[in-house]
Image (cartoon, rainbow over all chains, first blue to last red):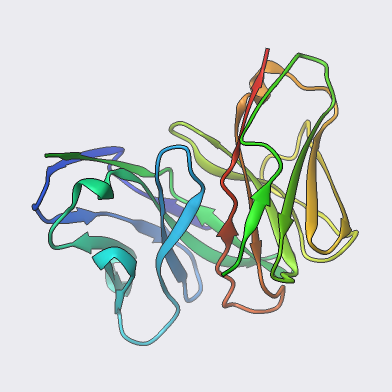
Length: 115
Length: 115
């Protein structure tokens, strides 16, 4: 069965520092991978997605993620964090089930930013 | 831009009440989804629908039902609310059932408290 693991429940970084959020997936077929962000009290917003091609994908708000098939990973990075990046981040894998496509989410990583 | 709206941001109900959560999307999407989100558990799929009057169970359908009478509207029903259904409920939609390019767009969520 497909699964997504985000090993870090909570990460704290200083403003201006670099960031890497980890995501590992388990899925037998070619994965379609996503990162979503959720600000407090809000719904989820798509940051970026990977379907095929270049394994380094660029997203909104200065985020990028790298797909590494050998490590079954899709880690999210940002070179310099801003206070407004404080939020919860979810990695997800898209899989085929019941004739349609569903997302399986990780449990999320909460990011705190120290001014 | 795709817009997914949910009828209430906050809702307080009593145990045993019948509760309706409404979701509307304005981009003619085929697929619609209901998730619940709980701290430490991430998002879990309750039900989804890939067409009018069609529905499929997700990972945690017990205690819930759904209705999709029109393409743009997907309702989640708690037949007899219980305290363990206190949660954040998120609705999402995506374009085509048969397409792998199925990123999901989320509503802002309804925070339901059952007393």
